[in-house]
Image 1 (cartoon, rainbow, N blue to C red):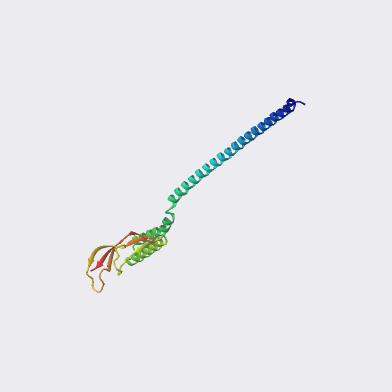
Image 2: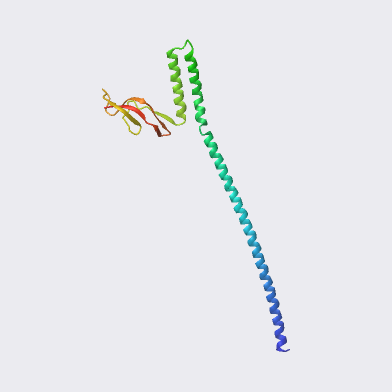
Length: 179
């Protein structure tokens, strides 16, 4: 055999191997491209689902907030209804000819106690500092008067009671303080 005959099969074998390698590379590239497209599609679907979930959470939160605003005072109003009923009964009783001042006073004091008890359940407390030392954070001094038997800077009388709600002062008590 000649050198040419020996070299020809090798060249043909190399060309055939190159063609097969090229075909495998193309398949691999096509497979990689297809896998990348599938992954991109999956990721896009996940993004769309996440967006939809976020929008649903936003809507639910807005609806819950709206309901909270609408119904925030329901408990408070329900606590006041028996007091309204008691006041109405008291007015009707006071209009009768057999009504006495004592009975009206008793009815009003019971209604006042009911009111304070009900609003106390909700966290509202009266600030009634008679006989206590003056505290400028809780009391507003309207005037000062000399008082026998009472230490200086103590509350003598309350002109208007103060109120605190859950530990926060809403209105200071307007008081007269001893000199």
